[in-house]
Length: 276
Image 1 (spheres, rainbow, N blue to C red):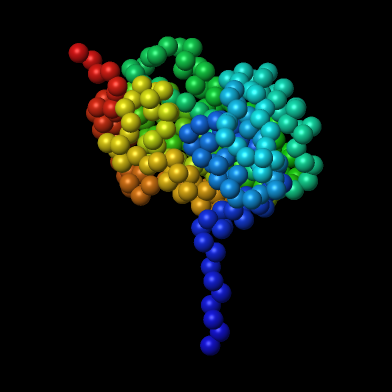
Image 2 (cartoon, rainbow, N blue to C red):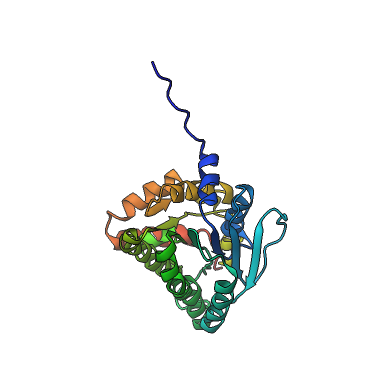
């Protein structure tokens, strides 16, 4: 009787996934989920040229990675167009491409808190920059094949009081990514929407919330491990964490007014500075 061939481990499969690209582009890899993804790219042994687009360069990288940081304020359209022009001069001309739209931020408070400027900038980074950057690289992606992975959120599955604008931006990129995957398949481009729940990063404190342990938050490493495994398998939607998958299942089936009311009570308890 013939012996079954050994199956590759998840780590090996992820490493081989990164090795299949000649060019990897990520936004916001200086901290949080983006920095964890960059670490996994670094440890994979890929020969790809790796580019980070953000205001701050990541630290602690070894010389084994072919890495270039391109300083860019993603909230500024002219800044993004300029940096993509630089990117197109530097990146290899052939081979599959991976684009990871990771940058994003949120905020807490009753609308329109904290202020209009903050909310408009959030929309620029979370939505406009994602569409803009992907558009500028889309023809190249179709020519060469590859993948676009976009970090959405569990919040994109339901209306979320006290984080109204943030949740709406993530609902946009979630549905945009899934629709783009249907279009891109014919051109050899797959699109993956990564939907983390609460993750223990600086994101939550920057948004004005406590650490998300009360909601069963994952570490960045746990979240990224599941996200990358979904990217390996080209899953259109990757929800990290079994509790989050359960929440997303029910959020999609219950009346949105119900999920909004429950979400309002839950998120109220997570604010750093409760009302007197």
